[in-house]
Each structure stands twice: as C-alpha cells, then as structure tokens.
Image (cartoon, rainbow, N blue to C red; front, top):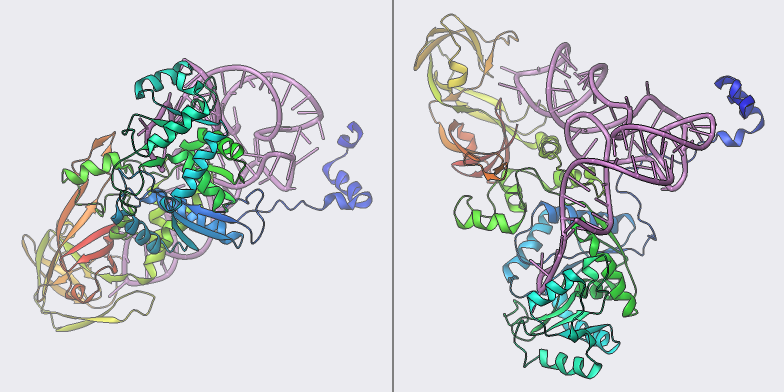
Length: 514
RNA sequence: GCUCCUGUGGUGUAGUCCGGCUAAGCAUACUGCCCUCUCAAGGCAGUGAUCCCGGGUUCAAAUCCCGGCGGGAGCACCA
C-alpha cells in the first residue's frame, strides 16, 4: 500500500490501466433528475395515496403532498388514490371535498381512484372489534384529564384491566347508551413506552355531530391513527407519505397492522412546506378571513391554491418548485422567490406586454404628427399587435417625470424621442427624432385619448415576526391602455418596466412578481 | 422535561446508504458584460461552502465511528 502511494497519480493510473482496467470503470453514480428512488418499489406495482381531510381549502402544503404522491405513482407506472380522510364530522364540510378536487384539478394532479374513508366505516368498526376481541384494545371510561395525566405518568387505569366481556358490553354501549366523552376505545399499547403515542392511544371516540355525507348513520368514529392504518392497508397502498410531524406515529401505525395481521405499506415522511410569513394553518387563517383582514380564502396574500392562482402563480411552476425541494426531512423555509422565478419563466412567453402609468403626470408633445400606432404584444413571440390612438397627449409615470429637467431627452417607447420643454404637472416636449437611441432613458406612456383606470393589488408578506402585517396589501391606482379591456380575466400581463400581473377583473389587476 | 427527527454557500437542494472519480454539482439570489425600443425573458462570466463543532478510523472522509452543539416536531376523545 505504502509503495503504491509513493507512485505519482499518473503512474498509479497507468499501473491500474495496464493490469486492472476493470477497476477504472466508473460506478453508475450518475445524477438523479427527479425524486429519489423508492425503496421496495416495483415498476407497475406502486400505489400511493393523497389523504386530505376535507376541513378547509387546499393550500401549498396539499400541493406538495399530492404532487409527490402523483409523481411517485407516475415514476413507477402505478396508481394514485385520492382518499378523503373524513372521520371527524365536527370539522368536515361538503364544500371542502369539492374545493380539494378543484384544487387538484387546477394543479393537474390526476388520481386513478377517489374514495372516502367514511365509506369504509363498516370495515373499520369490524377491525376495531377484532382488536378488542384479540385483547389488543379496550374501552376506557376514564375522563379526559385522568387519561392524559396517566399517560404522562405512565400509569394504567382500571379499564385497561377489564376483561373481554366488559369491553364488549362497553363497545356496544358506545353505539347507543354512552354519551360523547364517556367512553373511548384505546389501544393496549405500552404505558411505559418512551414514545408517548404508544401509551394506549385513542382508537375510537363518540361524535354525535352530523357527518357531511353519512349524516347520523355513525357515532363511533375512528381517529386518524386507526383509520389511516386500516385504510392504507386495505387500499393496497405500497408507499404512504406524510409530513414529518407524524413521525412518532409510525410505530403505532405498524404495530396496529401487526396486531390485526394486516399487510403493511411503507411509510415515509417529508418536511412540511410553508413560506416565511405565509401561514398555512386554519387556526391562523380562519380568523383573518372572519375579521376581514384578508378578503377571503382566495386572497392573493394567502398560500392557498386559490390565493396563489389569483396572484398569477401557475400550476406548472408549483410542480417544478415542489420537485426542486426534493424529498427531505430537513426543516426549512423555502424561498418564495424560487417559485416566482419558475413562474416568471413559464408565463413570460405568453404574457402580453402593456404600458402602465402610476402617479400620472400629463405630457403634451407639441409637434406630434401621429394619430395611431401599432405595437407588438410580445417582443419575441407572435402574440399579435394592438392599435393605439395617439393625439400627442400622454400620461407618464410620476417616477419617470420627476428627474426630468428642461432640455432632457427621453424616448417614449415604441414612439419617438422628445426633448422636455416644460416641466411640472403639465409637461411639454417636442419630438427630436424617431430613431431608436439606446443612450437616453426609455419610458412607457399611456395615451390620454382612451385611458383605462385600474387598481393594482400588490401583496406583501402577511406576517412579520408573527405579527399581522397591516401593510400586507398595497392598492395602487394606475392608468393603462385600452387594450387591457380586451384581455380575458385571468390572463397574464407584463406591464413593461413594472412587472407581471394577472388580470383579475376589468378594473383590477393583481401583481404577480417582478 | 422526555422522545424522535434534522444540520452542505444568503436561500433551497444534489452528492452521504456502497469513503477516492468534484477541495463539492444544480437552482435561486446578488454583481458585471452581451442581446433587447422593458428594470422581463435569453446568452456569458463572476461573487459566495475549511460540507455545525471536536476527536477517531483510513494511504484517503461531506461521506464510516464516538462525543458535543444548534434547529424543528410530538407528548389531544384533530388530522
């Protein structure tokens, strides 16, 4: 070994090449393009699932999960199941089922099957009963406080010691006699486990609220851990993904399936996607909507899918962005600007270029000789032209007007160069030529013949240091071209020298990004 | 407090399982130049990381081992 190292790299290489050429063949350590490969995944045999609870509007977090679920199904020629995890009638509403479907449609996430956990209640009850019969679960009638205290102190209660008869009687009573809160089914886990979720967690509880689909048909509802485990197993899921905060629950997930002697999918976790200052949780979003601090769940400041859509973020950009984040567990706050960058590149080729003016200042070109001009809607792509009527009376932006002095020369984009002859609120200028000059400032303008007044909504971060940002929404009055009115609502515009906006209505545009 | 997870440039990641092929690739951000009747897009170049720290193993460590430290999450009859 030491002898080998005395040789130079070159001679080592030569030595190798002549005697052991096969060692020089580089291992297939090539770069990955998409998501990392899945352990245990067989081509054609992968089934993933996206299991949202229909208790709110879908947001960027749902986008990440569903896109990952779909991409993996696609990568292995498998299937994706959309399964509404609707086992808590207190929180779920019919409109949310629909909203989630709309969101997935918009994202272009395609699923092969759609179902509701609540449709399998019979099976779930049966499995619950089975667990009781097997002695792996019991009905506990202790009160909430006692249960939680015991859990903390690793103490078993007397219900745990109850025999099968007692459990069966109580289980039956849960369907009629017991009132909500009087009895729950608990898993006989390990009260002294270091993992607190294993300390006899709840499996079923009584809820009398009407379910959005099944109304009053059921009152004994499984909780998340039990429902997910059973459902994933019977749905044939091979790979199940969820966010990191569920990590401690996977021990329970596997244990439950073990005890029930059911097939076990592989469970993997990834980090949650959230942007700085843009909370995703219903707990903070709902009050904002209710107090009128944001206009609704589609407010462009929100990370809801509807909010992002209104802001002008397109689904392809969200997908690229999600994929660029990878499948990791490290907790990070990804940069929103990366999403914007992807978005900009996607919308740029199809965004109509228009002129817009803020803080308008009047400018009269005294020797104007044009009555109409044709301007391309896009510098490179064939997106048609628009005709603009001219009479020498323009608006230009206050920002552009302010630094101008008499004698300065500027170019009115697409028109001509002028020399400023008068400044102030009513500026004047005279044409000095029509040829393009790269050295002078170029500014956009709007003809005073047929201006269109719009307001531009500019959103900023919602929260700064956990405080609601009172200036999170700027509304700017602006004047733009007549052509704006001809565009469809929803079209993407690039206001020259200002930025990309999405037309939200005839008199309102929403700023997307620079 | 206990348990689990995590730690690569300003940011997000690739590489870590199977140590050398890369004194660390890509994207984003920033800077400059080119192109352009936009401060966009496109092209080119540049700035920026002793791969959390300290030991160890090895001819060789971001990659393996040990010990620290930082960050996050969970501890519900919610998912």
